[in-house]
Image (cartoon, rainbow, N blue to C red; front, side, top):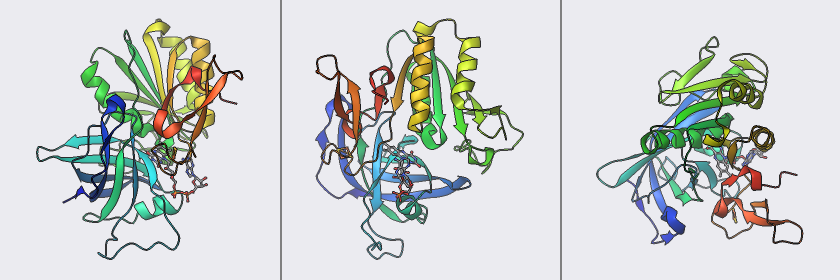
Length: 309
Ligand SMILES: Cc1cc2nc3c(=O)[nH]c(=O)nc-3n(C[C@H](O)[C@H](O)[C@H](O)COP(=O)(O)OP(=O)(O)OC[C@H]3O[C@@H](n4cnc5c(N)ncnc54)[C@H](O)[C@@H]3O)c2cc1C
Ligand code: FES
């Protein structure tokens, strides 16, 4: 059973509170090569919104001994993929992650019953403007995680909104979809699938599955053929920064609103270390832009306000 280990809870605007928690691993399973979904049970986790993230790091190793990494391990930030609140005050959050280096390598070693330290929920979530009829969710790789959470929330809060997802990866075996289902790896012949009843179009750089080419090309072609109300359409995105910069340009061309969830390198995750700056347009500034913090002012930003170069 997990419990708060620190009386650190504070208000962070209208998204509520955050805290430091000892979380218990419920499940940690592969979904495709190098990609896993971990479920963590956290007692007392404050309310969260789609687009927020948690910082995860070691507390006690699964041997029961304090985890002693060979080098200092800062907590790593991960978007919330899913959240299920049980009646007893325990929230089960899901995180989709790809093993890249030291931190995610450690995460991959966790087994059910192990513990981890979690700080969150952090940052602000996506916001949904009024009058939206269509929401395009455009993801690169594990960037699909916050968009799945957002889609599930949107289906409840805005059932009239049509949602279409786009997932771009280099090659078919890196498609981390069907994360809620049992199948570990997609059938290479499957060109599209569904997550929580939401149609998803897959684009692969190497043309090994789905639409050949970049996810932005796929989304632009789809939007040109299917969107007749740009003012009632919004794109939400998370993925590599060049992908989101290209999406911002596409949305400007198509006159579609766009929010991007940026994944800057982060240390503290809560506005202290200043390591995650983003340049954002500001007409009042002599240079036309100011620094914002990805962890505190984002991670989602209005794509039209981001200074991409
Ligand atoms: C707000 C936010 C949300 C995130 N959500 C997720 C998520 O849902 N799932 C997920 O798998 N990852 C997510 N990330 C990225 C994740 O935190 C990094 O993959 C992780 O920090 C890598 O840690 P590591 O110790 O394994 O790698 P390291 O040993 O620190 O680095 C290994 C390699 O990964 C690269 N790397 C490190 N951080 C990032 C980054 N932020 N983006 C791209 N490459 C990076 C390094 O440059 C290096 O090449 C998120 C990052 C942020 C800022
Ligand atoms: S990560 Fe420390 S200020 Fe953003």
